[in-house]
Length: 130
Length: 325
Image 1: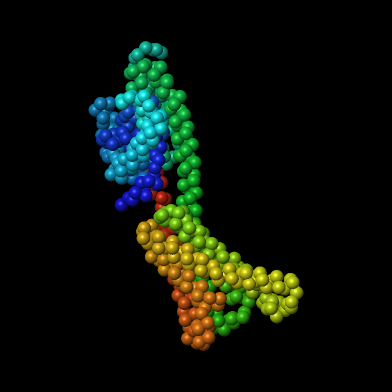
Image 2: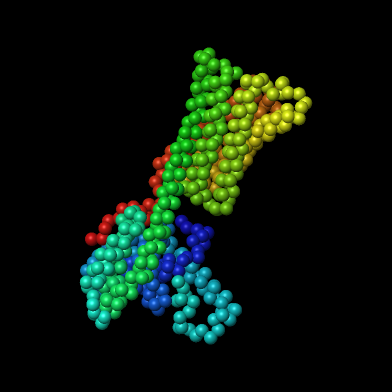
């Protein structure tokens, strides 16, 4: 069973790792799907290469934050079978802890008036990471 | 070559083959585990870029892909090398600890056996020389084994685990230095006679005696430092179940090491030293118990280290995974 100390020891996450966890928080995806989701959620500001993606996947599996799901074709793409990944409960807790950490940072930035004039909905700090 | 917004299947195919060839730069284990997926992702990226932006879109993918691939290959090569070295070090530390655990009882039994048959006496050179070598060699191997344990399993909390490890290691090194030094002193004395009988009040003689005394203190105070460190190490391991087995064994080994300070010549309470045979039996039994448990303990721990595969994280990333069908 993980402890708060064990999760805290993993933070801060690298931008690539956090975005992969974010992408999987919405449901299981294959590698290309994760890349697409990252591009979409960052509005094109962050693109992960295949090498970075699978290095991160290797680390995340080793850290028990994600696990392999199954292999099946993606009807939206082609007939090729693709390996899907999903977030584990531990990975979800780590992603939540990182999101909370970033939220505290944003609050600090607002308190110091660094985000004055930034309206809701505009690309903010979280979207520009990486 | 079409510069318009048309699919470029020939360029996608060429890019795919070229990317697969460049994957050879990645270490074999990583390539076996993730190479097929990486190629599939790149191929899909090229196809989508070709549909969206034609050949130009496909070509634009190459610069970031090459940079990404170079970083990945370099990182995985370096990490793979470090992990391999670390795994090898851990396994060899286990083997040395196992040898150390065997060395003490074998030497002890051999000397006792030879004395029993009259081949040697307690003052003979050979058995004392053997002890002078086996004792410090054992400490050296145990120290290496301890390093292997620390490298293989994380004792939490990390900061306290490191303090316990450092104390235990320091104790072992004190015993190694003290044991080696006293062995040398004995060997020198055996040839020239006991120092305290030969030298008088000269400065050289007194300095030599001070060095002897320092080695003597190191050789026994080391048990106190080792005992404290090892007991804490074992306690943390037991509470957190850091090792797959042997956590309580570490704790017992630490406690017995600490008691050795009180059962040796320097620390033994006078009541034990002055009660004749019963005191001698207690002292000898305590030392025997420590020697047996310590040796067996390191044989067990050494076998565990030697037999351990790579760390779970390394195994997960490098084990052979079925290729995508």
